[in-house]
Amino acid sequence: MSQSPNRLVATIFGAVYLLVGVLGLFVAGPNFAGEEGGLLLGVFQVNHLHNIVHLLIGAALLMAGLRSTPAARSTNIAVGAVYLIVGIVGFFLVGTALNILALNTADHILHLASAIVLLGTGLALDRDTTARRAAI
Image 1 (cartoon, one colour):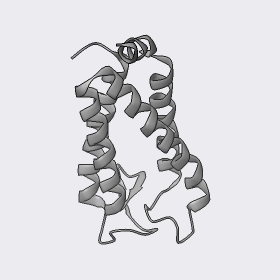
Image 2 (tube, rainbow, N blue to C red):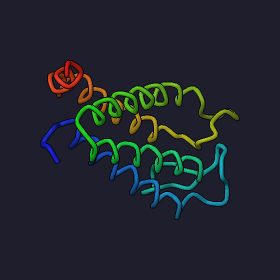
Image 3 (spheres, rainbow, N blue to C red):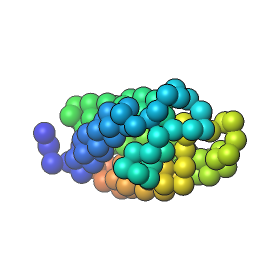
């Protein structure tokens, strides 16, 4: 694998989100979706739907990181944008029936931090590699 920052970030974040998704399955409790969930690491509230989302995001990032720099860059930008939206909107969903992922404040902060790293890496790094590939 190339030492591309986008590939490295996608691979690491993918592996971490896959791990979080798997570990969350053990603490999620009986609810598949909804405002209630178990606490992962004693802080992050998760339910089974939330864990499935982590597994899907982790798989997408990991596959893109292992595939190519342009794939990793595009996936980092896409996932980062989604996490930015989820991180912001999540603050307004807490305490409502729309909070089907059992989000809490710790989740919002983690999602926003992930968005910053993924978007920052995707938008700022490896741009010349992607531009060269598009020209070919």
